[in-house]
Structures are given as structure tokens and as C-alpha cells.
Amino acid sequence: MKFNEVIGQHEAKQRLMQMVDEDRIPHALLFCGPQGAGKMALAMAFASYLLGDRDDEKADAHAQAMLAKWAHPDLIFTFPAIKPDGAASGYQPVSDDFIPQWQEMLRKHGAYFSHEDWVTTLGTDKKQTYISPAESNSLIHKLSMKSSQGGYKINIIWLPEKLRTDAANKLLKLIEEPPTETLFIMVSEEPEKLLETIRSRTQRIDIKKLSTDDIKQALIERRGIEEDAAQRIARVANGNWLKAIEELNAGSEKMLFHDLFVMLMRLAYQRNIRDLKKWSETIAEFGREKQKRMLIYFSHLIRENFFYNFHNPELIYMTEAEEKFAKNFARFINEDNVIGISQLIERTLRDISQNANAKISFFDFTLKIIVLLIPRKK
Image (tube, rainbow, N blue to C red; front, side, top):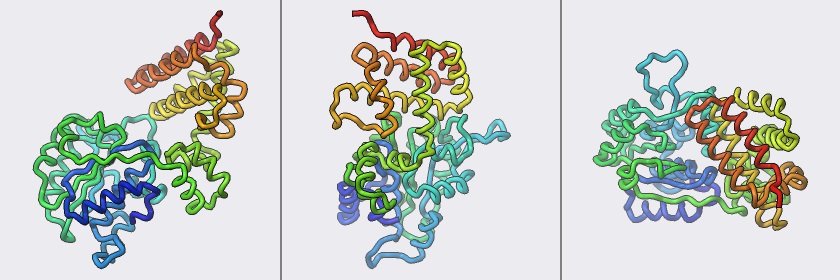
């Protein structure tokens, strides 16, 4: 994968190339930034460049062939995984056990994918992913061996915030005393969840969200989208390439979430307790990761409907379907309740993340929505 395949991020590319030109590549990098900005794409492009996938005299045809399949022996991927059904009680997941699924996801999505894409590829939506101590032990063993091709051994750690504390402590020792010509590239969306001792031993590179123009141009060139449609999608995406791709998929999960939001608000306005209970029971059947994604989407819609009332197009990032519903609904989200509803969604999200009973949590959520939608008497 080459740098020209990475959407936008010209400043980050320049900074990485400057490290190479000045021979100042640190032993540990931490790429941070919002979802869909291209952090993983940058990490994979930089690793590919260092391993020989380039357009200059140092290009390595053999390395390029291996990297085309993401099967280079000196490129190690570390990622969160799950404990499969039927695994022994003492089993700890390691990335090696899930390489077929990982490569399947890369073939399908390329370098732009989300945690949700990974969970879907794993075939589960009801288990939490994590990086285990066994993974750290595996890395210690792999990185202790010399590079098979000469040059760097590179470990890309995707979502290091998923490291269990005992796994993070083992990894810390490895980062403190890395083998010769070893490079760690951590790709994080929540770096504040990493141990401070790990963060302090990395050189942080903050990746900004993509510009609307970069997304628009990529949609036109890579997806064949007409300019006007590409402009609207790029604006709604708000710097997130994954969201732009989602907008192209009419049958996406987001459409389901939108329909559920519309149903919830209509039933809450009608104070239809019986059907709200059915709504809650339906949601309770989702896996926890899907429930969390739905709540995050609801939070987004509450914000958008509140700003819709200001009649300023520059503040609004909605699809046509979302805006159509907002025309009649937005007035119900106002200064009196926007904070309360947002806090309610956050509390429910926290409860679900902590494995609260989903049926109880979501039914309670719907009842509180009824109260918050009732206009206050002036």
C-alpha cells in the first residue's frame, strides 16, 4: 500500500517522510485521531514504505508481492479479539488465531474499517473484544527473532486501548527495551485509555479529520459519484470516510437506526407504553455492540435536530432522510430538554457498556424520553 492510496492527510504524510529523510524514526509511534480519518491507512502505508513498497530505487518487488496480501513476515498485526464459543476456560485470544478473519476484512474494506466491521467479520455482536496478556507474550517471542528480510520488524497495534491492564504492563516492558530495528505503530481512537507510561514512550502524531474536499474528491475518483452528490455526502460525513461510505449503502445499519429513532420518538410523543415496551424488547435482542452503536447514532440525531432549529445550513450535517424527519420533529428538541436527553443517552450507553439488563435499561430509557418530550409550561 502506497501513500497515494491514503485519502488526504498531506501534513501527516509529510511528517512521516521527514522522519525517514532525516533518519529519525522513533521506536514507537502513536497515531491518534477520530474514526474514519485514515489512521490505520497511514500506519499501513508507512509500514509498507519501510518494508520496500515504494516507487524509488529501494523498491523491493518481493516485499511488494507479500504486502499486496498483507502477509509480510516482518509486519506483525496486533488487534483486539474474542474468546470463541467452546474455548477452554483458560484460553486467551491472540491475533494469530484470527488471521484468516483479519485478512478477510482487509480484502473487503482495505485500510479503512471500523471496530464494528471487525466485530461483524468475527461473526459476533455479543462479545467484548480485548487484547490479552497472551498476545503480549506472543509479541515478545516474535520480536525477539531477527528480521527475516533484513531491516525493520514492524508491529502495528490497532486499538491499543483494548489492552487489558496485565497485557499493557507486559507490552510496556517490551516498548521500554525494544529489540534492534523494531518499530511499534499504535493506532488509537481513545489514547486517554492507554497507560500513561505507554503513552509517554511513544511519539504521538495527531491525525485530523478529513476535509470535505478530500472526501468529495475521493468519492468522485474512487466511487464514480457525481460532483453534486459527492459534495452532499462529503458534508454529511463530516471528516469521516467510513461515514461517507456508509451513506452510499442504502441498506446500511444506519438506516435501521434511523427508523428505530423515528419509531421511538413517535411512540414516546403518543405515550404508547405498550408499543414502547415492544420496542425495548426488540432492541434488547441486539448484541451489546450494536446497541451501543445505536445509542451513539441517537445522540448524533439529537444534536442535529437541536441545531436544525437555528435555520443555519452550516450547522447541520444530516442526510436527506434525516432532514425530512427533522422538518416536523426538530421543534421538540429545544433548550429545555436537549441536555437532559443527551445525558439520558449517555447514561444508558454507560449502563449497556457495563452489562446492565438490556430489557430494563431500554424500557426505562423509553419512559424517560416520554417525560423529556413533554413541553414545559411557561
